[in-house]
Image (cartoon, rainbow, N blue to C red):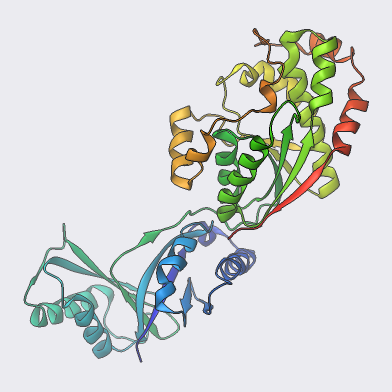
Length: 390
């Protein structure tokens, strides 16, 4: 009996050894969570997942969600039938009968026992049947307009489909630990969060604000960006931290050119404390080498010096801005990121920020304020915002 399904393929999980089951289970859990609003069933078969028993009117929305789940390489809207040559031929003719142009048939035979023919023989036999019954089609194996795919699986079912829809790829979220993203309202940090989710990291975020020097619009914009990337990361927690008093004290007592360096050292100190408190394994930033004054190797080294026991990951470190923008557009954050906003780093912004700070001089400037007490006060300002993916 024929039924319509969505056939899902995963990518890098194939490379895993004895712990492959953990990755497969995590991915199916993520798929089920993302599709929980629909009345459907997700089933794992050898080498594939299938979504079935869904309302066809939901098909487009289901497909849009599957495109954003890390770990999914590609998927197809397919027809599932018992592995029987006559049924394969009949279903193939039905799929192709209304088309006009050139075609070829590609067979993938994971089950090598149910049918006696090999993959090339099955493709040739099915192609011949299509030619006999579909007068508007001709064979072109090199550059066809249409490709009919026949996927014969070990569960005694065959899946017939035309097109592949590509997903995010990468690894399932939750298989590579958890991380804390320094999330601003700009272009880079949401992309960094997406990139790490694609590598299997469960992402939370910290946002530093300078209210009342900055408006609530900056906060609203960050929450909007977090909502967009939550389609890829899953539910996302944001820790909102005020650094206004810290900035006031730096501005009042320290050399202005060190303002950004000192502020970022404070941010990383706070981020590490949050990681320890909430069990995060890494700090994630959207830094790109040489992009701005705070992202020279000297600046990043001096800032990183405050982090003693937590790894710092910079997934965009070698990207140029155009590459980051391309990804931002692809994942849907770009238009929100370019909306005007007041970032905390623009408050008391020095005219000539230090580009290549020396640690000894930075520590001297830092000693002019009660750094630890100001960090403590900032942490006491914490507000926790939970962003639910739709």
